[in-house]
Image 1 (tube, rainbow, N blue to C red):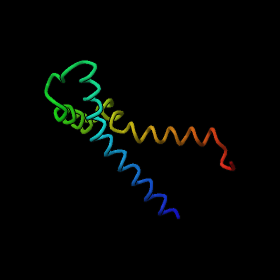
Image 2 (cartoon, helix red, strand yellow):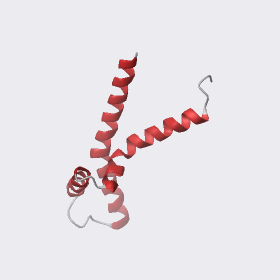
Image 3 (tube, one colour):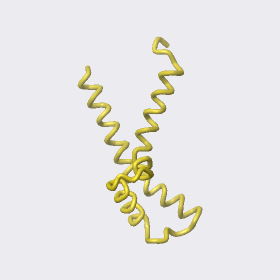
Image 4 (tube, rainbow, N blue to C red):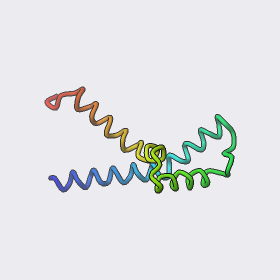
Length: 88
């Protein structure tokens, strides 16, 4: 049973990390394009490459952006545990 939970958590973490690396930059680009116009240095791929580079050089903003989906899931889990008792 423990191995199943570990595998499930690894699957969730991998999917959310992939979303943070590939989907979030596209979303940021599209929202930024609507609000501010074209991205100054290029297109969506340029923005994604910059985010990936910042992630690899350990810049906090990029880490928060990329890990945001996984951190959000953990926050929701914590709220659920505090809000609803296990017996219900």
